[in-house]
Length: 419
Image (cartoon, rainbow, N blue to C red; front, side, top):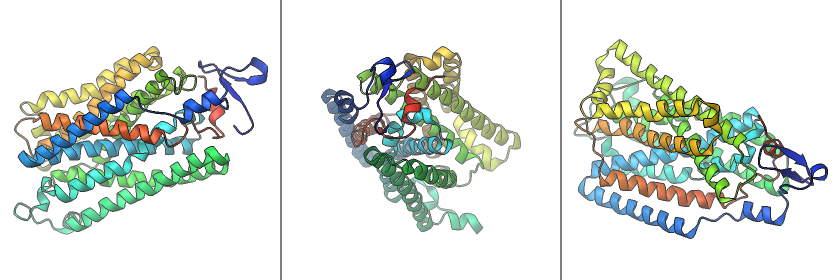
């Protein structure tokens, strides 16, 4: 972009300014202003602050009246936040490694998700330290003695040390990627793109291992006798689907507000829609594979997990999980028009985000409430409060840099992208 004016008509067609006349000049003061001066509307900011305050009040009240439910709710929402942040990092790394220029115009959105990673990790650590009673093997009065490798792995000190190690690794990679991306806006150094591609390749290897192990440590160990060799892949598929869904909603929102109008087009939304239908189908494949293999093997240590989640009032939620996370997205996005319509995409993405909450709920809550689902004011208000905190944090993260990587060498390709 250095020394060059890129013009764009908002329909996927890029033009040379001198040949066709200016349509969108990214160097124009008005365009730079809207790309670098993003602010959350005052009414929206007040509403999010109210939700955040209600969430904190509900959490404090829950800790006094029903501590186990309150800690479980905080674990659920913290895993949701960590999942969105990691999904953002994974999307950024995938774009860099694959050299996919189409996603450059959208990249600041997942970068903003990644910026919120420390907040989600802090909430997770609070649960692991102060709410460790959720994990029965940490309670000396209830814990069973595990021998061999399992006994070593479920050592409380080693468990906390691993949690810190995961967080440090993720934050180090996130800061390196974000720093290079944002500094490129000032110096236009193409080498930063190559550097981020190398960092991303290393991150993807580390992410594959740490995402799997953290899922085992923080969620699967809630029921220490149960195990699944593909649980880490299952959790990854769910978190990435939620990250794609959130990216779609934020991109459409920024375009509707005018901040990314003429930059994010139906072509970009189409590709995001294809990714969403692909990964929700991947989630369904892993969901079925895990269930089918456990059902077929019929090993008591494994089947108990699904018995508690398909019995009584849990049964309808078990089926609803599949409907929200795959059935509805699949049939809504299968037609080409569904993937190119912001109206349809945003609503499907919202369904996937609700489905991700339900999926985490089914992973966490039956471990201490096997009789019947418990969804009350604590769960609802803590979730809404977390949503408020996320929106406030997202707005601040988006304001830390231009909404578009102005000097990325692939920006022109992204702006002129047409399928």
